[in-house]
Length: 112
Length: 112
Image (cartoon, rainbow over all chains, first blue to last red; front, side):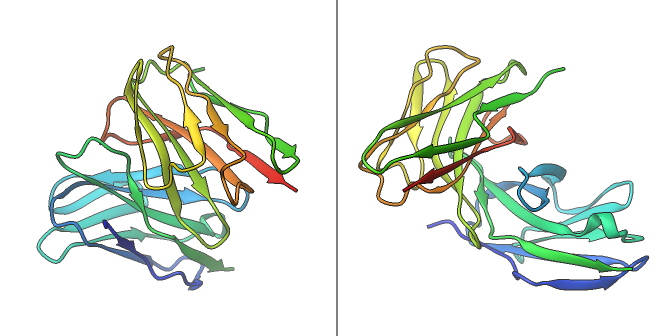
């Protein structure tokens, strides 16, 4: 059974600080990694995706992937109250023709 | 604008009735998916389809059925055999399996 683990939180971060969200996965063959943001009652929206080891930056967001340690993280710089949401980590196992496996999400709360 | 349309937004049914949730996309994506989300749970894959006239069971397919007669459409039927059908149902699509998912706005189904 493929598993994706996230700390459920809430993770409380002061406005303007860096929020760090972490995710671990069980399938060593996983090849694609995604971060989604989900506001309460809404559908998930894609924030970042990463396929290779290392860092990938997009504006205030940085995704980090370490396949050897089987973890992926998301950093949010200059956190804003509008970043308060649940962040879902999702993983796709390469070679398998199936959907993404999602973690249960981390609830992030940015304190003004 | 391209996107994924799910209808209706809210759906109420009596126990023992089958109900069909609609999902249409105009993104020209090959792959489509149905996920279910329960409070405190991550997204769980019900069914997915890589191409027209083909679909595969996900992790929790029991009590559900789908069809993929057109590229644009992937309706989900929740049958009376589904023991706990009340949930938030999310349809998604991607260019191909393993690529980022784009979600519709979801259908919240309540069965009493």
